[in-house]
Length: 208
Ligand SMILES: O=C[C@H](O)COP(=O)(O)O
Ligand SMILES: CC(=O)C(=O)O
Image (cartoon, rainbow, N blue to C red; front, side, top):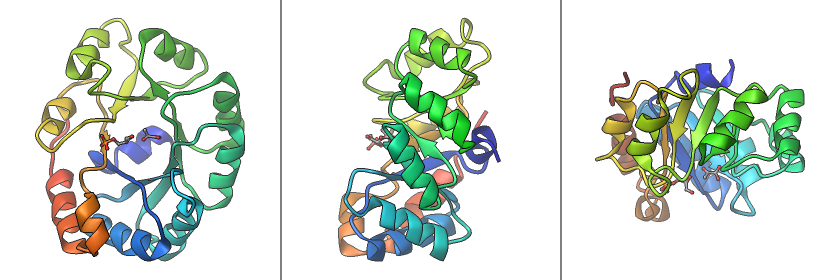
């Protein structure tokens, strides 16, 4: 599956920042049960690689990838840990080249038209728009839809259950990313039913 095919599996990619495999595995199971099978585990905790590996091994129904992949070394490590895709908040030339030669589906982040054009030149036509809300949100996506007509986006950053439907209604949006389906409080108390409920609502969102 390439990145667009992975994104087609669900309208929302949960962005997960988890501290242990004991949290990661039941959380992943709850989200998949709720209908969100594509999961992004960010490399923002010391346990991130272990969590990624645990989900890959113990929750085979999930398509688990890594987020906050900032350089080729991290890309290599997440691929070895079993990531099925990698996500970056931005991109460098080195990271883009490493992603292409690794064969791992890659979703690089952009915030400007020039960044999007540079990545398109490197062959990336499906891009993360980050931080979506802070960088212009719906207005930016609508404005670039004509000049960057062959690009599709996964807006992430500041998206809420209330704003997600408007993003998903845009023709250049394939899916959205967000942490709201795994709220800190529910994760801290192991309230997996809440995560499953939030995932079920998110997975029912309509895309254009
Ligand atoms: O850095 C933020 C993550 O990409 C997700 O953003 P969010 O917590 O605003 O949904
Ligand atoms: C922002 C995000 O989701 C990432 O760090 O990849």
